Amino acid sequence: MFRKLRIILSLLFLIAITLLVLDFTGTLHSYLAWMAKIQLLPAILATNLIVVVALLAITLIMGRIYCSVICPLGIYQDVVAWLSRKLFSKGRRKYSHIEKPVVHNTIRGSFLALFIILMVCGMLGVASLIAPYSSFVRMVQTLLQPLYIMANNVLAGIAEEADSYAFYEVDVWMRSGAVLGITLVTWLIISFMAARWGRLYCNSICPVGSVLGVLSRFSWLKPRVKDDKCIHCGLCERGCKAQAIKVTREGTTIDYTRCVDCFDCLDVCKHGALKFQGPSSKFKVQGSRSEVQQPEANGRRTFLLSALSAGAGAALAQTGKKVDGGYAVIKDKVIPERQTPILPPGAHSAHFFAQHCTACQLCVSECPNDVLRPSTDLMHFMQPVMSYERGYCREECHRCSDVCPTGALKLVDAAEKICTKVGQAHWVKKNCIPITDGVDCGNCARHCPTGAIEMIPLDEDDDETPFVPMVNEARCIGCGACENLCPARPLSAIIVEGIEEQHKI
Image (cartoon, rainbow, N blue to C red; front, side, top):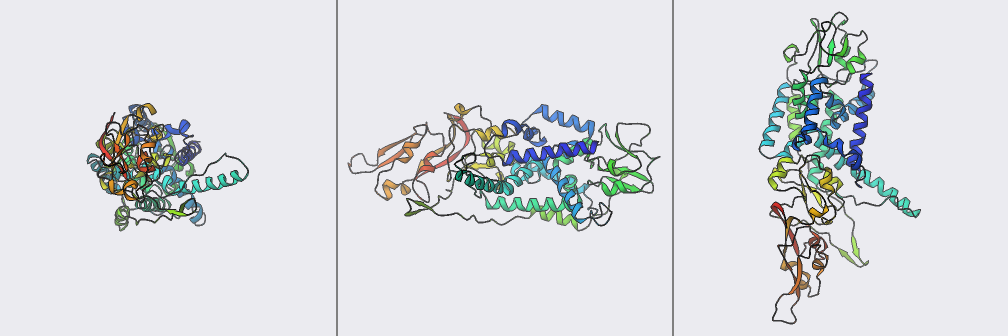
């Protein structure tokens, strides 16, 4: 019963969180946003004490049930291990394809220490490479969402032929080749480890699993071995995806720091020797780390460390030609070199954002204006920044703040956003069309939502002088409408620079 219930709940969580990331309309966030906010690391960064205390209490009561039911990356590994078992099991030995992993207690402590050091140093974006929730969301957003959008666009084309607008087309574009490569490598490594060694990632690399593993040693409910019924057949050891069970001639021991409460061992035991219960005199309390004999390390330790540090080359995006009236080819805009990155509204300051954003990129996948993309800067690696080549940050939209599970983005409503300054626009004379082509423009002034741009004569003493934009710094909020809608190519005549600390105007 425990195993069946765990499977049903975990699949519901996996499907719901995946749909939450894939949904680009924002519809599902009204119903499923809480699933992102109950993940442990986002809850800690958001100082959501109720969720943190609840998760720790559940761990002290039932062990690492979080890793098997709530964590989407842990559930994904179970799915991969199940598929691997179905495809590669030999004969009647259900787990004959599973190999014994390398010793991982030392590696687990090293990765946890590295994660903490990176967080203390303000490099949460780099630390998120091994964070379970962030890794899963990045994989779905980077690798699966483009396919989901392509399928949506096919349905939109079919619906349009039937005079229906139930679907609408959305552009598919690659926000960062480097992030795509790293995400692909992460997915391959985690999938390979799950297929070959089960939950090795959870018990060797994952910092959340390491912390919960310490608490799970003291949990009240846990799988316990009844010695008078155990015949030491080894079925539970072979069936344990977390390599937490060790069967020897002296007896069967369980390392509760690794047990993820999948209940597979209860299912495979044919003699009733394993029960999920509290302390009892009938059951031998086992599972301290000293009781479990570890195999000696081998070359796979080197493989794990080197594979996680490996980078990936950038992939080139293929874009179609855009034409103006069917005659002139319109060049795509290029990203200007900004001295200070533009952070999403509600980030408050660069320091606050770097300390609270887990780089899960949920906001990137949900941005309807295509202004968010992952950063490639090492100190803020894969944390979102804004750029205005494909759109601008509309004053009525605050979806990024709504979906952020860590509290890194905090906006109350659209009224607050229209007066929140995230950047400052600057005029670039050499790119301006009235200067380069000698024609009137004023596109930036017409579309500025705050009226911060005014067209003035370049030379007040010359009647023939062109009119050029002047930016009122006191009214500019850095939304990027001027930069995005500027007809100059490939660089706009107005460039928005970020600011260190956002404030109201």
